[in-house]
Image 1 (cartoon, rainbow over the protein chains, first blue to last red):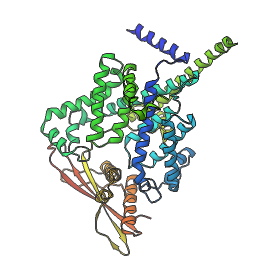
Image 2 (spheres, rainbow over the protein chains, first blue to last red):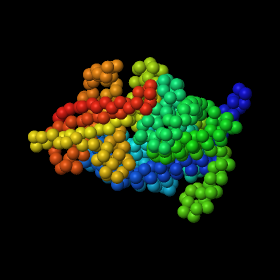
Image 3 (tube, one colour):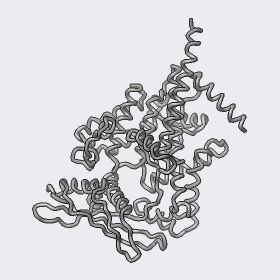
Image 4 (cartoon, each protein chain N blue to C red):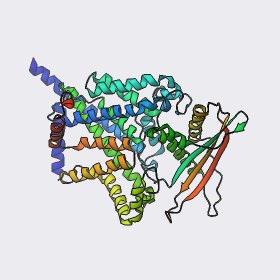
Length: 297
Length: 192
């Protein structure tokens, strides 16, 4: 077992440092989906842009920070009149990154403008936007159209970074649940059902009347989150784990109405798809004429 | 010529790989320290990691831990031209705008204020409450600011003060269906 792990690590290292890459479709698909997510959420923000981040909006104005970094990131708290420029910078650079035009500069602009908007929209978006800007940072170093060796290495490292980020989200949200009594006692799903903002009436009825269902769901979620970072590497368990995860995030997106968080976490599953499943996805996507020309560009 | 260039390239690629892996490992070590439970690391190390993380990589993963035990609604009244307005429901006003994202603003303003209140309030067995100190908190000012903006937009006034009322439906652990509504009053507080 230990010998196998060591062999895998050494072959992975040889492959990484050689600057060669065989399959890269997962990276292409992942980066396109993240930029698509930014664009869709940007479009949703458009009609309420002045309310959310404009000078007459709800962003609470804070005083200047002593550090240059904070003043830059929280720019819209101090100078909300720049919101139109920042917003369109985010939209145009994300569109260009989606179409793989403009390189690292465009991807850096996409990350920075998303970060600035996220820092002023705490009351509008939820944790989904945090996942998005953390991934957008790694995507700066991901070159979907790789030909030069050092770019291949950077892309592979960026892809690993995005994977670790995803696993950390699961692991730490599981850890925090493990130290809270609600989750340990199996009561949390039932307690959540009393909050109308997260549970619609029909679901609340089910969860409050069927005790065992709420308790089972509680423990499935708890153990899923903590064990996912380990079990996802076991080939036999990968597919069932991903099916549970997709169901879990579809529920988060559509039933709990946290669609931004649910959808970005669903995108994260692309990181763990095997090469044959990615090939199948691509073959399905390229059947659509609109996607055919730029999916693999 | 080509062979010598290839030979040169190999160490450079190895260097990029090693440097990249070290950078990645350092980044995630600091992220791990900053997002882990506070008592997992020394305070000075936590401070260093937290300083690295915020604001450009900030993240919090205490999702529903603990599970919120209450549903809160925020009401406000404003003081303008020598009189107080009637109590206005912030969530109703936001709902009328017809955008789910704007509705979240009302929900989150109430939620953060309730969270701050919960930290500083102790409800005794005889339903009396220990005094809370939330007026100076960020969540209080943020909620008051949202209400102030609504008063300006919807009633075309420039209020001198905002009075907040937080209606909280509590779900005590024993007997889940029992709902206990607690109302907290904040203000009047000058908004300027």
